[in-house]
Length: 510
Image (cartoon, helix red, strand yellow):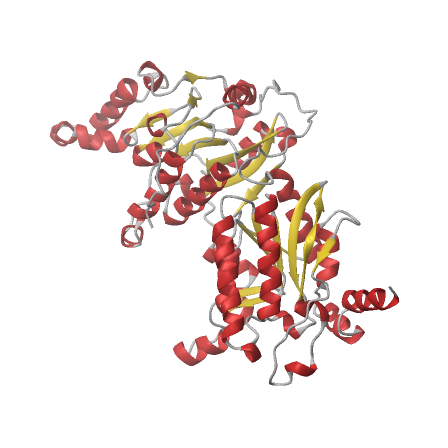
């Protein structure tokens, strides 16, 4: 027993105090400190703590530390089981070798079998070069399990150090990616390779830092200033997700009344369709206690994707953002929202869509960049989703973007509209210019004729009740009653069941 306790203590302590000090000097926590922040106090059970590699050559036979540079096990977050693996940068720089990979494979298999979330705390230098192709094969096993677990259990990658080369593909396969500014980077080829091949000079953070991936590439869903805040937000996200695809997200008691009126909504959204406003304010008025978690907050800001609770139940919210690019759909907004809709559908999270969309973003870059296939991703995601789907048209809903944003025609369970709604093929000005082009051109006062035709088009085809009269929306509701109406609809749809056609899988647009 004395020997066992001595070995376990050596494994928990790590390679040396000096290595721990070096980790802290970089502003980084150790792997065990990170796990302690993530999991409920005293809940962690470690797996294969005494595992060591069997490799020889290049001096490896003389350096065989316990854990082999990765700590694996399970614990709880708010009492619910969560599996975790954490690279220990103090041992081989967290590099992945054969034994290291086998430990990760095992904990991933355990998470899938148990039907519980998997969190990876990444801080590694890539494949262990001394072990050659055996190390590379270890990544293949991780990727295969990431794919097997996709849509089955939530997978969360937390980037707390470097992640280069093939190693970056595992986070890309998971549901959510968190990064910490200045200390975490992700890239396929580093600055030295970029410089050698293209001549471009760039730093590690400039190439693959947290802000780059949160704002430009869209690889990271969240970016934070330090590890403590980052890991606390991981815990918050887990509290919003089910343990697996066979369960519903956990419901919480709330003191926010379901029938709370939203008088402020009357002033938040201008009747003039050309005036911007902050959709965040609308969301805050609708959800419990104004609290929500925005996904990809800084990427594709013309659309908002968020998790929140309404009457204690988790919902996913997709909303156009008129304060940015007038809320249009473009390539990045389509990709962002499509992935979010797929995630919600995979994990039994009802989807509420708030529409105020003038259409798809026009332009040569968008067309050449494939807006057709990218926009089709969002269309496919909505059409394929079987969770409860409620859409609400706040103001304008024009053209193909209206159809794509979970309109009734593509399967929304219930569609509501505010009295300010305008549903049409295009805006009245554009429509009048097309329909009445000849009358306007031949008129003595073309501008007066144009204004008259715009007014006529609005009164005939764009008045707030046109869509309701034709059954395209289920009801036109009082904005102040929106929260109560949505919660009532969610309760009704809570037992919804829908089957997809029997097939291996679809072939979504790429």
